[in-house]
Image 1: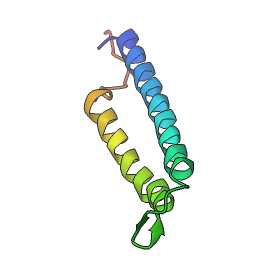
Image 2: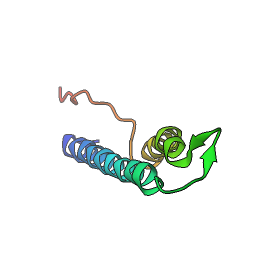
Image 3: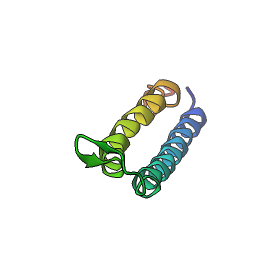
Image 4: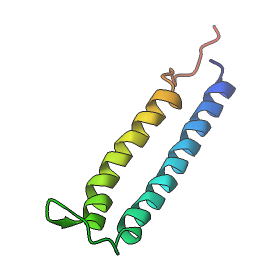
Length: 83
């Protein structure tokens, strides 16, 4: 992999991580504020509380799995020597 290809991959990984963070924030807002009017409960907790804590945690794990499966690549970051 050339230095230019490595740089593009690193930029792609950083952009995808930023997008995943924005998706997680939107999910957290929906889970916390969007479900606040619901009377449903899970383990005696209001649905909004369970969804905005445990639900966001599980969703973050899924997002990280997606990133590692389809976006991140294992690559050597050392510079290539041209002797």
